[in-house]
Image 1 (cartoon, one colour):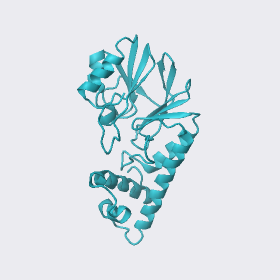
Image 2 (image 1 turned 135 degrees about the vertical axis):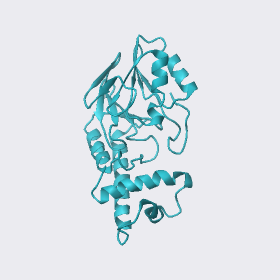
Image 3 (image 1 turned 45 degrees about the vertical axis):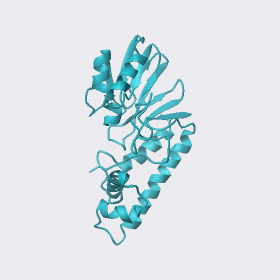
Image 4 (image 1 turned 45 degrees about the horizontal axis):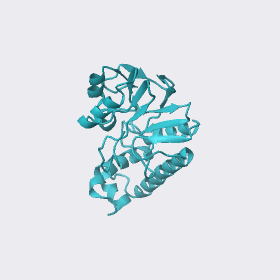
Length: 243
């Protein structure tokens, strides 16, 4: 279910996935938008058991957690460092659904706590913000984002036998290997661009590097996101990821 919060950052909006029928996981309830919360509550009202499950703590994914949990009287499962969680999830932990189980896969990079969830019975990966359904990049800013962690998480996901990925933004990806390759390639290309831009500009700030790397091609509404992404890339190039 789409929260209807389309923007340059969220693409066509945040997707909340309802996984299961009678024992349901509400995966990322999304932003605290009244109509979306009511629609989610209505969709699961006949289920025998409902659990809210979070990939990470950003407001466009977890903002509705308290409202929905209060409305339904249910518990929340999520990673360390996220608010309003009853059960902490770590790598390899399992959330049961009536159609099998969701296995937590720790994939830091976008945030330090980020989890994907693998549904082995369907060979499906719920990718959170590790991948997007459109384009070939996702946002990795300075700490708690980390470029080195993000690249390691891409490698980690290659070892999971998923045939389809469901990102939180954009349509499903039916070639997971291709998507992982594209997102890795984009990040490595950006690293090379930053390395080249820093030659002779070793003391440059992210704001100064913005013009060198993007020129005039960047829409103004994306300048803040791009600047913070460059800050993370500069940390990586300088060997101080996540500090």
